[in-house]
Image (cartoon, rainbow, N blue to C red):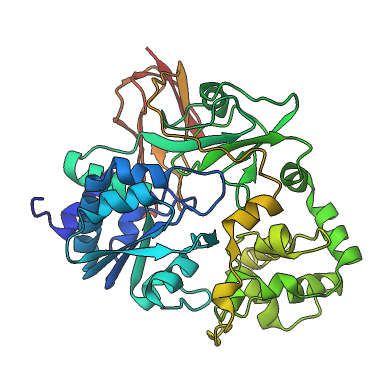
Length: 443
């Protein structure tokens, strides 16, 4: 691997439009500007049904190692760690043969949410990130597998992000993991899996725990699309997501037993964060009777959904309550400040085994291997949202009627703004440019 400077790495990653592929979409060049001692790869992929990272690792092991080394160069890290589960044996075998001295594997238990970056850091390094703090506060930068592969591609080929690998799983004829152009519709992605096998399906973007309800299959695939999960609309995972906020609050007010199971199993709470979901539900139930610190702790919720899907015996969603509180607090400019407390002595035993989680979620009938497949995907058009990342939306630099090539920059970010550029994912003609998206028609 040829020597590339830290500045060059960051510049190429920014130009390529690389963002965190794990869901948040934070611009990667910003993470690479941090100075840390550990560059950690979050390869847990503990959301049931998603099969992307565990298959990309053995398939592209050399590129993954090179991407980690680029990340270490950019951040000054002296140690690289790939945190993955023991059941990912093909990945372990492929990576072990290639590991340089400064990179090691850390084998995680098959629990949820091992993929929460704060939990991953704790399990892989023993370091605990304080509430409301960033991983850099404990000398760690975290990226997921697909992000690091995009780093390597950007540095070596100077090629931008125009594709996304995702899993289509559940009630489909042909569960699979596939790489598709950004901007392709989820309807077309579903067709690649042979369509739904139930008459009245519901759809989730991402995994069954943290994924969001899809209201239209015309929704385009973006840089952060985690997967397409198909279930009967009557399935509890779909029905919960269809509840409006008023219903969620009404349930919380009328049936809470104050058992505090949601807090006892909250991953952030058990490693020493103040966050206590049962107190936040109580505060909402009793006209916000809580200390300011307790209310502000809602801002530290990772929305892992353990409180709703695993802990609560009566169907309350403390996570949705927290989300509503977070929206109000952020609108007012509030911030949380609080100490890191002692971790629960039982913390490691209070994470949820994935096998138990699958059963708890009612997914046994829908849990499929979803193997990686190479498929030709040539959509007639793609719709590319200008905001596929945290920060400012990209600003179009093309006009309607202009011909573009795959990989060409079609929207950029103003100097000094947090964001990344956007690139055409197919060859074609710009059909429309709006404040929200650019549409490219193949031609």
